[in-house]
Amino acid sequence: MPRDFAEAAGYRSDLVIGREGSFGAAREQLARGGSVLLHGPAGIGKSTVLRTLAAEYARTAHTVLRCSATESESHLPFLALADLLGQVLDEVSGALPAAQRTALESALTGRGESTLRRDGLALRLAVLSALRALAAEGPVLVVADDLQWLDPASAELLGFAARRLGETPVRLLCAVRTEGTETDDAEYDRHLRASPPDTRAVRLGPLTRAQVSALLDGRGYSGLHRSTVRDIHRTSGG
Image 1 (cartoon, rainbow, N blue to C red):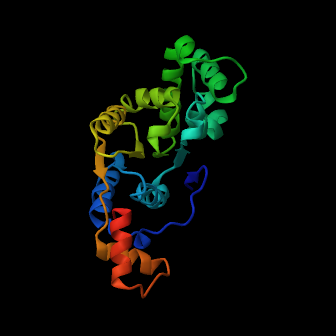
Image 2 (image 1 turned 30 degrees about the horizontal axis):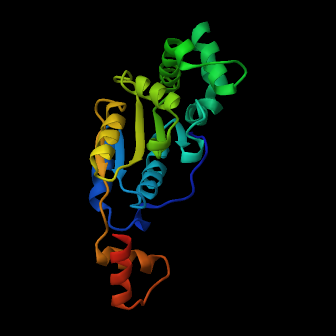
Image 3 (image 1 turned 30 degrees about the vertical axis):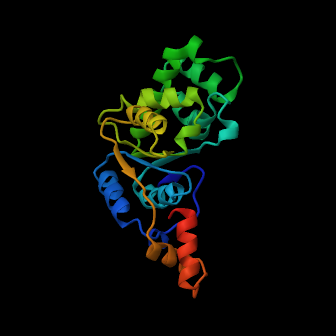
């Protein structure tokens, strides 16, 4: 029976409008055991697509680990890591060498001082070992939204593990905000480099006016005048 920590709401892919191409690319990648990085500007629908894909592929995973970062909490070290591994800590701790177990428990529980500078190697290896231990029981799906707000410590540890998973059955399904500026593109490249080598980047672009109209219809705003739909499409940028 798949285990899903922080179970998502019942999202259905047929309720997502205008994302057939993006869904197809992401589904193909996940179906063959690869990882996916969704990216696009704020409000474009990355979280909706992420949740829908996660709901589909959670059924084939033995373990689902989730985190969703926020800007206001991005200064808290190891917070995203605690979201991902906190509920499976007791399960995996026995599979870790003593030094790794101590460092990971300190980082996730706050029972002792732990920093990347002091426990860097032990923590990095502990996250990698924990994911491998979970994957030994069955496929693991890691779902991470708003990567741009991940606390730096968690981002570093997750990236270290992701680059070294190899053939281990761990898939990452992540989303990050990008705007297309030079600075944002550099940030996106940083997140892509911190992903497994076979990660497929899928960009979400604006909806067409017809798709915006269909989206409004699906949310109960049917019968709007065409000029109103046009104004909504123009103002929202799709």
